[in-house]
Length: 186
Length: 186
DNA sequence: CGACGCTGTCAACGCCGTTGACATGCGTGC
DNA sequence: GCACGCATGTCAACGGCGTTGACAGCGTCG
Image (tube, rainbow over all chains, first blue to last red; front, side):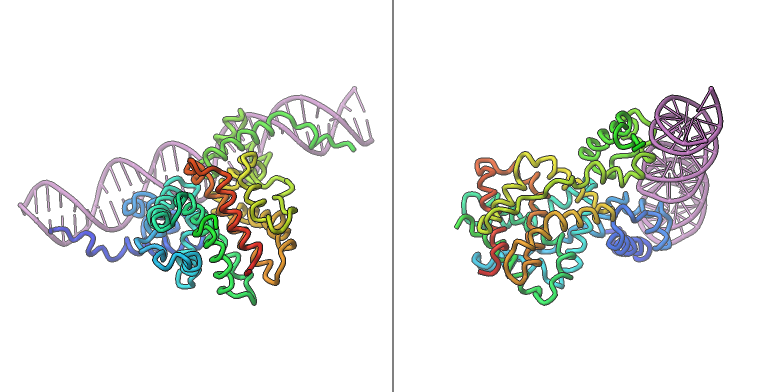
């Protein structure tokens, strides 16, 4: 009862988190120093560590996987590939895609790699495996995970090249390709 | 004439490069210090910088893209997807795949990211674009690049899960999926 | 009132990548 | 033959990093 802790710590901790979020997103993990985050938040570097434990934990807390519902896997099996790709490339999902890319680029760090891996497993691959038919569903789910991961990472460089082609066409193309793995052999 | 330079610098420089190669591959870019590389090679940390310019340049020199011919793109168009995937997953290509994964994980660093990007362009995407039919060949080549990149990165976690399925089955599955992008719409 | 816990400050530690000044040995041009 | 240049190697130091420990203010609860 007594504890006011999580309820009302309004100022500094949140300022640090906000600075960290933008700076990590803009410059990456390594190029962002704890001292710079602290300065931007008007706080002491030591306080950053006090609040978040370490630079690594701060990074994971502000950029790590949200407790979001995970990608859409509910539609009809025959359109799952397209549904999935449309979900991932949805412009509204831009920030999530960028956060993912930032984490992959920092996956030099073992804790980051582990977080990424378990998030992919629990919120995507395991659920997908359950939906796929066939004996090798688990392997196919992993392969689809590889496809989706590759797409999210490459999208920032692909999008500007689209020109006249249009995002919808890219969704159709990649969706059909993913669908081949949803269906299995033939 | 006079210069013996590139020919006979046998000892220390190569020892440093060898230490660097194994340590970077085992522990990643960030977790490997210049001082540790130097110690393992029996050299002075300053000498590492003298020889290679910076830790970053050393990393790129020992793990960066080899001047290899690049992936197989010559076979018949109808089998290009499978050929490509078979090439990438070839056990003989293991070291290259690991080097790629190590670089992606260090792509926090801008120079690493740039090297990765231009290598993919010149040795893969541009050549692939030239081979693909259709008006949106360039976009399809980029999407295939995303697929292949995702596969190379995820393979270390996928391979142990194969069990009874077998690598050949994975090649068939992913190859068919890539083929969908080679062919375009239908 | 006194103990406690949370927030914040400050100086310091050890490690990092990198640099500058300095030695040394070797092949070349005068 | 010898001074020169140059590549190779050594050493101490710099500034920046993430993190820690000692300590101060301060509101709350007993």
